[in-house]
Image (cartoon, rainbow over all chains, first blue to last red; front, side, top):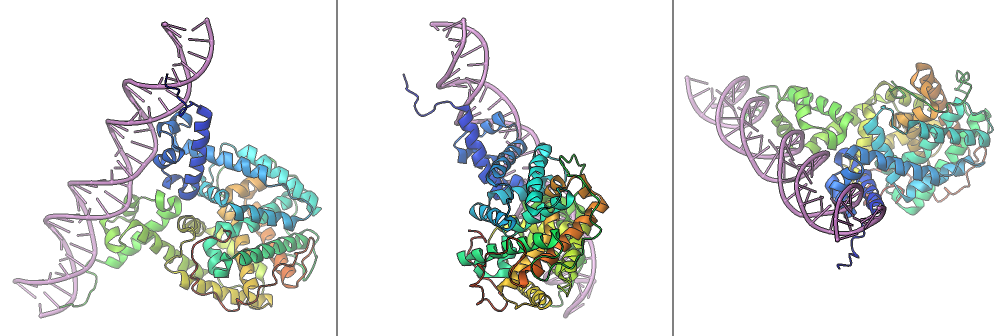
Length: 234
Length: 234
DNA sequence: ATCTAAACCAACCAAACAGTTGGATGTCAA
DNA sequence: TTGACATCCAACTGTTTGGTTGGTTTAGAT
């Protein structure tokens, strides 16, 4: 009897719904502000299922982060020949969906400098991108290329990490499609110019007043990165 | 009647201590994770004083933000002739003390795109910097200069906003003084190159596909910024 | 001296919270 | 059919939380 069409027990689906709901909740409120009850309700599942599947709020948070980062890594292609346009595509992907940036920010704030569980895996992803970037920029895949990748990611992401700042600096125009397109173009231009002016020495226009002189001796690529704690600027 | 309203028991000092404790607490845990009890205890004051002075947790948070931003604006000089070095000094100030970056991030995440109370004041500060930047870069103080300021701030701040990313990309070397100096040099070089290659017109390599042409009408500083909601990238 | 009002605090409160429990319900294998 | 097990949920719990209250201390004004 009771055909039970409404509740086909599907553990995997429940898990997926929780991850999805958790992503939205944590992207909006962070881990401290995120509410398990809201996540469960939004997923249409009982709260206990969170603990059955993930064990704790923090574990769910980490699972969400891992999933989103994997998805993002798969979505964003590696740098190709036109590095500026690659940054532009990064810009576009953030413009289309800010969940990624926000989650990365929550993560940075929450974990500070503690090493994350998937540290090595992520480092490998970045190492791959450093290689691709070095190839397209025509430089060695050394730490200079790594730093360049870091800066380029920053260029393409910053306006979405700090939307208030963008609005305050650029003005209401930043909110319009035209303003956004303009900003994108500017970011792309700065990225191109920065790369061109940094790798070869002198490039397009006025060129960079060489200031990166003591930078040289690093040598090989930083593949994994065990890293203790402490941030960049201890 | 209504005589002098002085401080029977040094109200100003209490307020100051609360602001200081709140700064530390909110920088570390954000507004959702920050605890009023901890702030009061750390300030050596009764919890109720928070409400007597500021009214609510959120109000205290805003007061902290306002104070820190004012302090930062006063500390960081305006861009001078050497724009790269100016970005370098921004880098240094963040390296010396990450409170600022973290608070800005919490703010960005918490207020999203809602206009802040001190919107106009901050917009004015930025407008001043846009002017200074335009002068030193030798361009018009239009929206292009504004976007350039935004990008430069991003370049100098990004490594400290995302320390995990920096560590994963650059490797453990990012934690050493030498690595930090190297990164600073790279950031400065990229900033210089970006400015040099952007103002002249044609950038170096891939070159910017000129799309920033309709930029003109902004002209003067974007004070106020009424802005509805929506972020930079809708 | 005495009155007044602000600064201050210990104790309190209701709500919200992460996490648990005990049992009902469905699934599969023998 | 039956036994074993996994999925799921309503209701519950112990604690933490932002915020309040009632009353006490302090200092300036009269």
